[in-house]
Length: 113
Length: 118
Image (cartoon, rainbow over all chains, first blue to last red; front, top):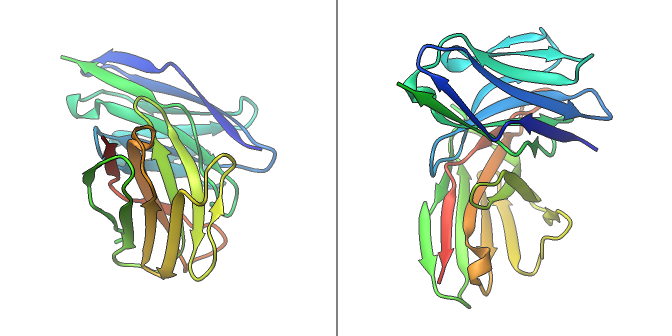
């Protein structure tokens, strides 16, 4: 079975500050890991994905995440927050075939001016 | 590429009526489509997996007679909420997976359908 835990349901940062959203996973098989962003009343947009290649993954909008197997973590970071980054972020895990995405509870990111 | 559409984007219906939601892959063929439900301030929960030409596979706790899924072509899956009740009010999101490619196939998400049952 697979599961995802996102630490912190709400994160608030100042514009220009570092963004760090935490994600830990549990998986009995080698995982594929994803970060999605959701704006209000919209579907999900893929930010980045880890599919067993490089452990440091770069995504869109300046986001990146590092897969750390020893820590079972896949934290999302961005060096400098922008107002447009305010949204809800979901970490997700799937098996190697991309079946059955399991989502974390989500983290709402607030960016203060 | 890899665009998934949903129709309608919003629907309001009376209790006891049925509502059909369409999910289309616009520029690729999707052997498999997934239906998720998202309650306010909660995460997405997989309801069912829809494979073209075969019966859908429902997750535990999801009533297959209430949530009818049809995947009649490689670009269209429909979710019908039968005899809808206020507790069915939710945000329904579909995703589609490209039929081509290697062992790993990414899911692409639609924009969602907001269902409100009065």
